[in-house]
Image (tube, rainbow, N blue to C red; front, side, top):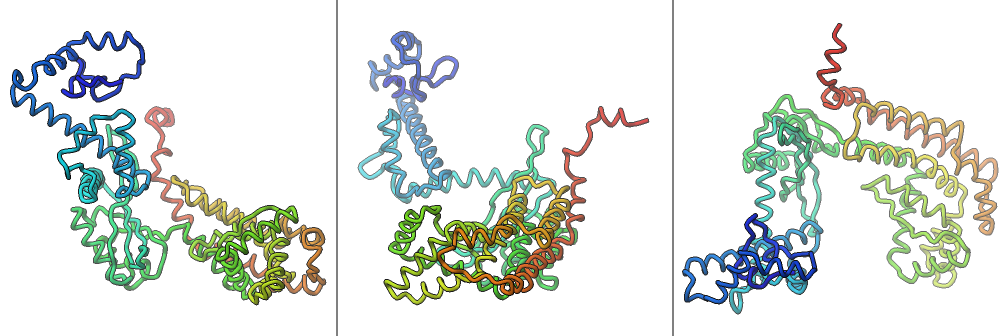
Length: 490
């Protein structure tokens, strides 16, 4: 409940509470209304209402109006902030959100209306309010970064919807509040690049440091995806920035290293490289046609198989291959039936080629092999992507993953072990040929080579895990408190 009189004159109780004027009273009882009607603030509001402008000083009346307008503007900016935080289009949804909030009882927002064409809901007004909010937030972040004893850069290149190259920069810093330190990561800058050359990236970074009043002497590390332009020994971004701070450490993101190791292992085997392209082609074959997709789903229902939607095997996010492989394995029979139907009824040459490829033993065995190997890499990747990675166990985790994958050469995984039952039960109608010679050729040319390639790439991509683990000495959680130190002293 809100009191119209107290709301009009922005009255507050003696304790400074804005209940009944700015904040609704939630005690929906008659005695609550009675108590409020007897308060000094309410009586004063009624007096101002009765006296009107004739008996009220002009400056007091003006101040009341200014306070209400300020309160309304604050409410509008809170609504705008909520839209931004929830990634909802502010230019198209702000007006409707304001109308909804007014309808819920926040009538003080009507004080935004200053005239026939002044409602603070135009696109220009919305953008100005949003920029004001952004300035307050960013200034606080920049102030914390400048006061941090050290910070590190996280940089990556991207493209916007217009396919224009951009550089995104995050900064990881230490924020001290009430004698407590907290590690923060904040997005600080995005800049358009004319090209992706190292000199352009360095120039953009220098301009950003000048704009934010930051010093390169306080920047102790650079994290990147490991692209040649970032980590090149001669003219890479890390090399050029190290000229400004010789103690800067260059860190190649461990998650990107893992993706590169997994992708290169597969790309190094001709058949698996072709299989990866086929998975991509199969996805788009159904994704680009609602009729084909509906037909596949209907066949899945008829055959009683899992109703699975095909997933895209993205090359830029290589570990998405596991989802693509799992989806194909779980509904391979339905996919083959659907492709053969498209081939017979619509004479689709693409469907004919895909069906023939999917009915080969090598394809089936490769899908089952990848279903055994990729989960190990996915678990490792998810661990690397945690918010707080324990660097002390990187060496152990990577070594155990390599051992588990290498063991698959002598002790095949669950899916590979059941290849015969998969062929005889799930694919019995499709006559997939599986002679001993075919099986042995697959093991020699694909299976063993892929296992070795994955393990070799992991070892080559993570030669410095022990060095990374050495940084655990900076982990404050491993430092003993004073009491334990005193007890340990002889």
